Length: 253
Length: 307
Ligand SMILES: Nc1ncnc2c1ncn2[C@@H]1O[C@H](COP(=O)(O)OP(=O)(O)O)[C@@H](O)[C@H]1O
Ligand SMILES: [Mg+2]
Image (spheres, rainbow over the protein chains, first blue to last red):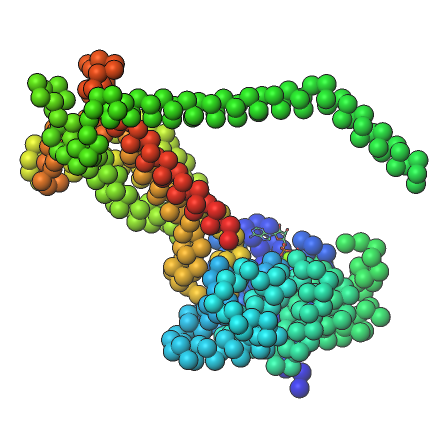
């Protein structure tokens, strides 16, 4: 039952000479919501961007070593097709960043890129994904309007829909609520809980309460080392490592 | 708490009082004066040019219709004619043709600099192109005169002094401007657009074509329009290669003239207040009107960018 969706072995990540991740061995469980917490600058975003190899597209000097096994393959192997990989791994970022296009075109972007051409099929995907992201009722009458006219919370849900439109297995979320107000934050958290089961969600957050509210498993990353992973309730009530305890009790970070 | 507030208030007051003594107010005076002078200078030039330029029509009795539609230009003859169509056409032809040539080249180079080879682009290309922007136009004209004109004469035909030479020189001259401004427009785009497009599985080319270019369009158009503004106002470089004949060109290889070249060539030897002199002011007024239109287009696009 507890298959690993990602299995990292001695994963090391460096930007040039700056070693950011120092060898992580971690089995991320399939179908769960996994939270990754840790103080800012500890390498959470870098780790997350490595799972879909985005880090390679965004910086020239990144060096990856070790292995990440995803659907039976080591994705750090050069032969892996990053485009195919990203079709299966959606990602949502800290700042809601819809394209300056219509709501429809934002959601249709991924499918179009992966070869869906028929208008009817696209319409179906867009409707289905917007329903899944709990945005359909709010936008169904203005699909042709600019996505930039939506509120911050709606924009972020649109970005989630955009990521779900390629029918991925995994959703990576990098502090998806840190730019949102409390009400929109609750909306996104509720959405994450509903996605659980159908998708493996890996959620980076700097809010421990958020990790406690939405995740099944929580991992604590500190200075590029994975200090502790455990069932969320366990980790917050009864951390085994001293550093985890210090962090969750607010002694540092 | 109460006393705390008081203390901080006192501090604020104190620092305000201190700054009132000098920097704040002085700064304000300088800034306001500069703004005021800028507005006055712009207004003065506009009013002066309008007053001079319109004199052709109400003092020298030149028929506006003739001025804008006739190609008979002979202001110093016994029976003077004042048809300026050749020069209006020349200016517009040079400006539009160079914009059409430079837009794809400049935007393409900007894409290369910002998206294809960003590290090399930022370190090497961008500074080089910024230097090119600053090269005085006389140098472009001089190179055109010594290299381009003979080349056209020998390889393409005609005397070499031609509309084509003018267009090429102006294109080369505005290319760096359009390239840097386009690169700025692309660099201004939030990085989130790139990362989310890549994260959806888009290739670099798909990201450029479907996300970045559409998002940057207002900024790219602004770049081209500012290039056109530089082209329409250019006199010296064009004058050196275009031939300066008062003829409507039948082909790209024929010599012709533009509004700016006619002004610079004739300003010196016409008497202030004469009809011959007034029509030059009228050409200047037309140039100013076109610049205003271009600037308004830029502002309009700038306002659209925020949406
Ligand atoms: N593109 C990059 N190039 C070089 N260094 C980077 C880059 N992105 C992040 N870093 C460095 O990697 C470290 C970890 O950053 P990051 O992964 O963003 O941490 P977090 O998301 O936990 O705040 C930081 O020291 C940061 O300066
Ligand atoms: Mg981060």
